[in-house]
Image (cartoon, rainbow, N blue to C red; front, side, top):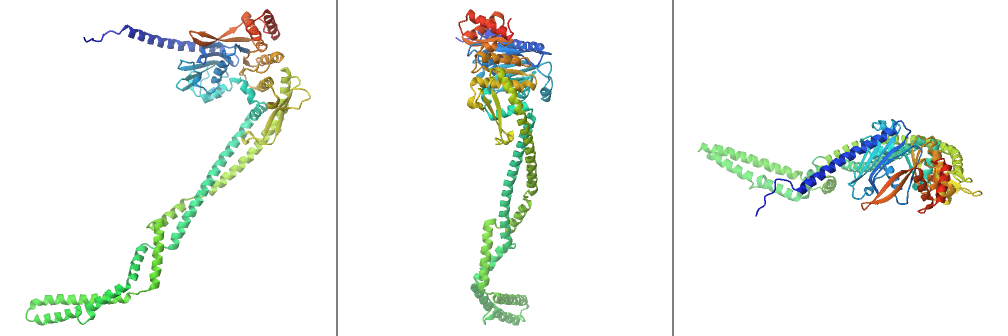
Length: 599
């Protein structure tokens, strides 16, 4: 039996089609919701201070979907270890232009999205990059599983490089990595430049050094090319002189070969010519004599028959021709000269010409002309070499002056930086700390100038300051980094400061001091901080709890703002662990009151 296909779609096909339509509708709704949410964030941000107002993360690591509205002042993120606090910091890092990895995309998803709304200065970087500032600033970054990376600023596609330029004035992220880079001389030098207001001077020194290296490279290339040209000219000059010295004439080799053949066979040639002369003319039975006798006999007979007259004329002509040939052979034989000296000369000359032809080809004069033409076309660029040498000398002079001025500025400002950092460290429970900046004239790298810097610290009375990497603990490094950040940001434009695990290696009174310092910073900047310590968290104006849960067999990260009793419970958990006691709650309430954040 043959079954004809049904003209109506099957139930399964209708179902699949419906599912497809629903999925597309959901995608459209989701997209619309995204931009509505962001638009709301923009409205909230309008006319506010420069800060991060709204963050939305989708399909990033453990985060399925997360939305956060941030406030001015001190915002704090808390939660159990592994809940995903640092994931949020990593998401913010993507908005600063950090390297993206497809491994960060949530399992089973095709892309991850991070988008944020900032209230920022309208102009400067955006206008320079040709972007519309509008009301507020919306940044969106997408990471696709196929490796594609897309960036949008105010819904306008742009590049990661442009994002880095824009984000530099919006976000400043600090983590434990920053504490390690604090140990690096290059990072220390950068901090001094920022404090001294010498970043432009340092950039001038870097630019001059880069230009010096460029000119040196060009000069080196020119000298190498010059050496190659000189070598080529030497070769061409040798060929030119060698051919010119031989002074060949057109066709001389062929002519010499012919003369050499003649001189080499003079005996045979003389015998042949002499024999021919004898046979044709000189012997008694010569052809000429025989023809003469024949001619006379015919002339006698012609009186009887005039028809012989033309034949007689031909015979006479033949006799005259034979006599001419005989004379020519006689003259030829007379000119043959078996000169052994000339033979040797010709042999030597031909040998020289053939040697040159094997080297340069059969057309020696043509090769000579080509050599002369190439020699004329090669320029040794002496003027360019002199110009580059002069430019290099001028740049080196400019570099020395700029580097010396930068060095004076750095060393002058370092005294004030020492004093201010020491004051900050006292407020961070390091009352006896001595912070010192040591300088030396050893040049670690011309691009950074002529200075070598070393940060030193003495945490206890009676101890000489020593390099940070040799004496500072993790907790001390955290406080030194925070002190430096506090000093560095005094004159900077407003931006959002993000601190991830700034509490590493500290606790107790030191932690409270760090919390207080972050609170003081939040009076000038929006501060976002990730911490495990209740002593720090209590100083925050706004706290968010990050927790990891399992939903439908998948791990997801959620965030919720905490207020009132919920916040007290979270702070008590942070202080006491899983078992929260009334004593812990009472202590937390006391902390909140002390921090001025009791509700």
